[in-house]
Amino acid sequence: MSVNKVILLGNVGKDPEVRYLDSGIAVASFPLATTDRAYTLANGTQVPERTEWHNLVLWRGLAETAEKYVHKGDKLYVEGKIRTRSYDDQTGARRYITEIFVDNMEMLTPKGTGSMAAAHPQQPAAAATTQAPASQDAGSSNQVTDDLPF
Image 1 (cartoon, helix red, strand yellow):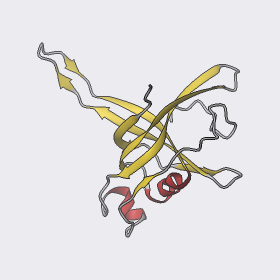
Image 2 (tube, rainbow, N blue to C red):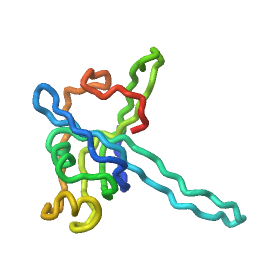
Image 3 (spheres, rainbow, N blue to C red):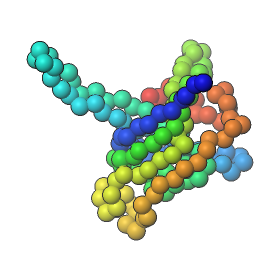
């Protein structure tokens, strides 16, 4: 038995980029930042704050929800699976990218606060779930192929 499950609670790094495949399926991608707080060990050693950036990929209805309601700075709770794919960059070098394929997302930024309030003053509290398509594979030509960290 094996398990591939990721749970993240963090802040959206930029507005979702949403594209539609020829079949009409929506795909959204955006970075999510999680931060471990700074602390001091018992011996006095200071450990600095550390931020990790995660590349999120959302499909279908969940992508459409993100397109409407998710904005840079919003706090999200997401559950999903880790997927790593490789591609050759413009120089022919092999590059790898690790993404979180999101199955469930809950928006935690309260209504009336943050960037969401200015863009969508009457939006409902959103929680959405969807399944990633079974037909996709890591080498799909529909995937974004750049070497940016998000």
